[in-house]
Length: 89
Image (cartoon, rainbow, N blue to C red):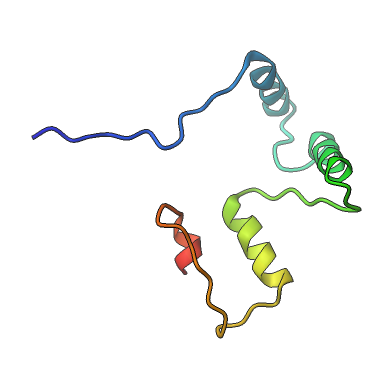
């Protein structure tokens, strides 16, 4: 039996991005530090917002949105068919 395999998230990383990532790995500052602050400042400036907070995952981002909106169990939240487990929990 042949099983069809679909690659949902093929990485596309150019040499400059790879070099930047390697610099973060080498510095041992992956989830905080000056690069994260620079990224947050860049996104805030370019989106014309006062603040930007970088988080570690899409699940953390969605949880932050739901907490910020003060949702309750009475809300209906519609999610896509292809998603991660957080959305349905």
